[in-house]
Amino acid sequence: MSSEPKEEKVRSYFGDTYLLFGTLALLLFGLIMVFSSSFIYSQERTGDGFTFIRKQVVFSLIGLVLGAVASRMSSRTWLKFSYPLALCSVALLIVVLIPGMGIRLGGAQRWLGGFGVRFQPAEFAKFACILFVSSQLFRKRESMRRTTLGLLSTLLLPVPMMLLLMKQPDFGSVTVIAITLFFILYVGGHKKRILFGCATVGVIAAGLLVWFEPYRRMRLLTFIDPWRDPLGKGFQVLQSMLGVQSGGVWGQGLGNGKEKLFYLPEAHNDFILAVIGEELGFMGVLGLSLCFLFVCYRGFYIASRLNESGYYFEALFSFGISCLITLQALINMSVVLGLVPTKGLNLPFVSYGGSALVFDLLMTGILYGMSKKYMGPLVRENERDVEMKTQHSGAAIVS
Image 1 (spheres, rainbow, N blue to C red):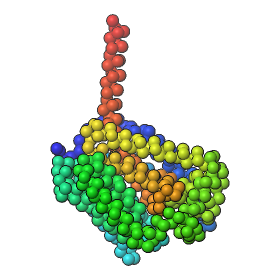
Image 2: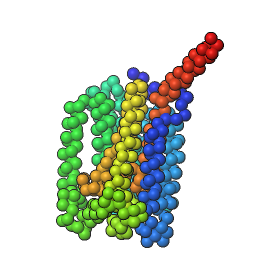
Image 3: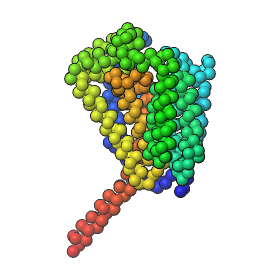
Image 4: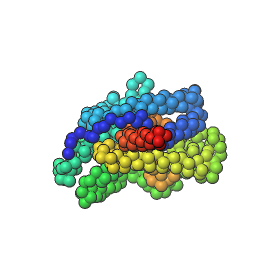
């Protein structure tokens, strides 16, 4: 099999518009809710209630520009830069751990900064892992069923990335990456017995890491019984569930929520769904969930169509991006509703955050660009049909 992805020129200037408009709807809704949930907090902290929404708008514009550029890049380009980007990600994850280089906040050293801007290498690592594994599965498709050459070479760089993320520590990002890579390897054709064996070992290792690390064990115990420390470790989860419950069916009205008034710490970040539930009620949460479901469905649909059209690398890459966005949304919502322990993951396109938002929009741009590959043949078929109908009509008129 060729080591290069199949390329063909298409005349279609439009890809999957359903994905595009669904993403833009989530982004616009996120801007509204970030403004609603952060204004008072921003006013108190910075003296300007528009500080956070102003930054979120800037991040959104940067992400949209990068997504637009990425949508026009060829698959061959992404394949070519899979190794350099993965190595760059490893380097950044090392730099962030160097004393004096990385920024430490809330007990975790996860950020690099300069000129008033902070960057989280973990978001880059998620993207780089998906790209690297997809490219390896494509390049080594013939030999990937061999345990050593296949699986180990595919995880050559993702494993060091995850180990470095554990040192920050960032257990949530490691969890999302590990699950996403499992699904990519599964659909990519690796032996099921080996994959499930590795998954079992990974789950056992994760359980040991949780139990023997005091702060992770406390998170687990707080999840099981948040009332054991209602004013300490369980405070955020309890306030989150209280906000969602107080919203009822229709909510208290946009801007009328009380949890954001310093009851729920930094409500515009990971727990923004609690503000949505309080202000827009069950119907608001349901509408947001359906919108996420639709966007994620379009992502998987694109991957399926690419696979049917013979674009193996593109299908794997698109599937990985869709998995990542879906998992992050699912885990974030589950944390806010008290269904899983706290993980510290943003709600894609909605939560406040620079690095996460930019990379979510970048990856969506890639998905949109990939969709043009199977849309192109459809456009050409439609053009031929129109041309044939025109010729038949002309012939009928002449006769």
